[in-house]
Length: 223
Image 1 (cartoon, rainbow, N blue to C red):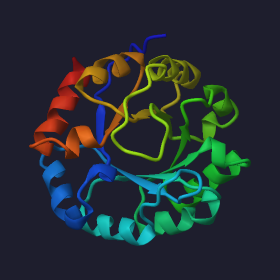
Image 2 (image 1 turned 135 degrees about the horizontal axis):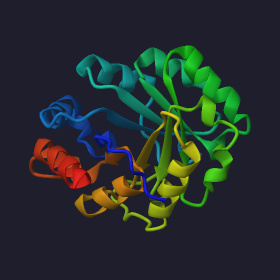
Image 3 (image 1 turned 60 degrees about the vertical axis):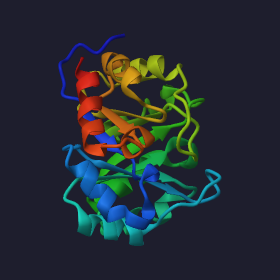
Image 4 (image 1 turned 180 degrees about the vertical axis):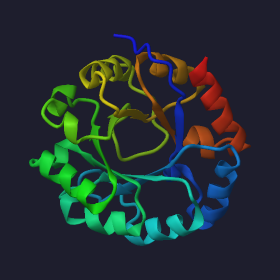
């Protein structure tokens, strides 16, 4: 199913691909391209193999930028940390369906803490897990790679999955975000399937001019 409503695609640079030794400078470089939000990947070494950052770094980023922060919790027991990340400055907290046996409860916790609530789906997780929490959601994040590492190639089945998620959402005002391996070639097909947010790491931070890369990705999606 194609998504026919005309929307302006949002671009979310993923700081996973930034230079953490000069993170403030890298954020400033992408801000010059007018992205819509920053995507912040939190990994615990358990749900995914790698370790990344915690609330202290999110708090530091919040002081550095006015952009909304989409904090993507790739962690087990996310409910233990939701309040900490919202207090640190998260605008959106996205948890993995696979890590939440009581998903509806966690989404309510995110909203009660004052942030928007998102659910991420790994490549092998069917969209049907969202059926009974759609009214508790502000964002669905379709993982187009297996999470845990940057620089992977997009898994083609993500296209149809985005379309299925959009179909399930119907008229609800829920963002459909896609994360993993996105470059200029993927932007327009994902938008046609119903994606409204494109998360990109190496395609933006790895570019010679990250600000220009943000603008080019948006133009490609709108095309």
